[in-house]
Length: 514
Image (cartoon, rainbow, N blue to C red):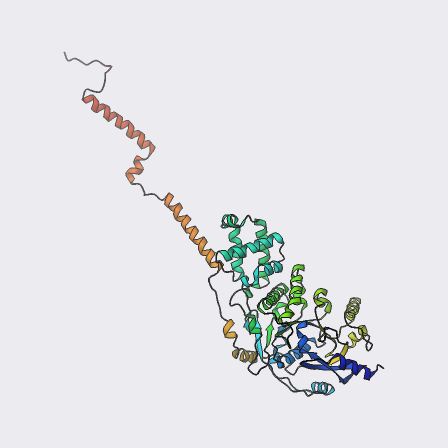
């Protein structure tokens, strides 16, 4: 049996932090909760990102719900990517039951049901604040990466953005981008090549196919106006708690490219619009991405590099990102290495491949004298996890098996009526859930082409439609009639000349009566 006193001492030394921290559970030894071995989470290091992993049904989603509650209490705004649709209940207080009471007694805590300030959000605008972005805000670099374009094709996309800037053609939604792409390939090709150089029609065709592929995953619902301001994610409620923004993306599981597009743009916008903050006592915003494998599932190498770069840099802006996924190997190694907090729920070993994953997972955690990590991962109960994090000096804390606190809010979805009530109180629904269709590149180019077509038609018509000739002109204009007229005219002239004695010599002699 492991040394309990030494275990308590190691946990206390490893999980005591300067500054504000929250208790997320107690360490376990030999399967028993040691309530003296308290596990604290320092708010100062929450911008160093994290991972919450585990098999289905092991409690990882409830873990991110619990941490979100603690952050809200500490006046830290939160953004939750709700893929499964089971996080909206955070807006209502939990329901006391024997299991919750027993868990909190073991943790030496008192369970008190609490509701939290919640803003429901959506990419489609259904049952939530609608999140949209314009193509211009997305920019040529991110658009190139999400479309997976080569250098030549990427150059054409940059040319399109430059042409639109120079000619005051707003790129708001995808139909604007497609219209400009078609224009420079056809009617406007000469104009473009004169000012910006030659372009390849085959390249523009490839770009168009890739944009249409993105459209087929539903990207039209994301691009457009009114563009969402990311500062609205960082609001504090009237009672001083951080707002918990629940983005409901239950329909994204079969559209990974769209989800990647949204996530990349959101991260880029957060990074670009947030000032450098240095070391803060607590983060300005913490984002939890449930089912995070969807972000990486169809991501190109360029896209992965972009995500990795943003994750490296965005923590200096006071923003933390947490990935929640079943298999920690779903997260690329380059990103995994940036995650300071790791909460590993149970994994199941049903196949040889499962055992290999478990072994690789165990190797990512600090060594410990209290557990055989590879074995304990398969033995964790629901709501239990292996935990390690970084202290203020960036040193990993001791690996601990932890019984975690459970959510104090409802662990279930809101009813339809509760959703309606919540949206009715929202300040952002009125701001963003309005139809906006300002004049943009599509309308401007369409009008330009229609005007050009109308002028060409008028010019052609003016050439063809001279004054209609009269009946006399039509008859006299006929070649046969002209010939007959010339013959008759000549005969008349000769007769007149003959009557005047000017008709010339005759070959016949005159007749005599006598």
